[in-house]
Image (cartoon, rainbow, N blue to C red; front, side, top):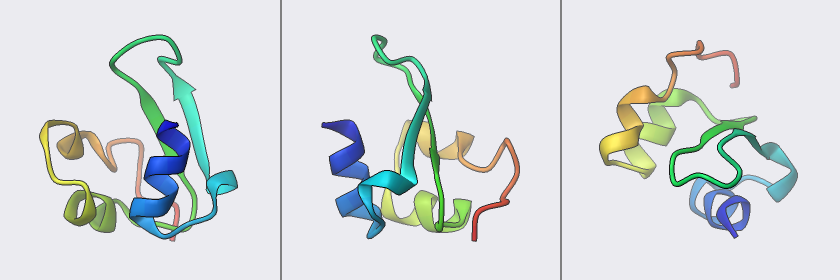
Length: 60
């Protein structure tokens, strides 16, 4: 469900969204290929967005 939501919201294929950790937790770490951290922060504003890009803005 989360991968579907993020893929639709960010305009990427579901395969581009990977849950790295927190599969059973409320707090998750995800990787989205093909989207820059700046775009994620703009499209998904909120508490977790400031964490976007801390691993590096390599996808884009």
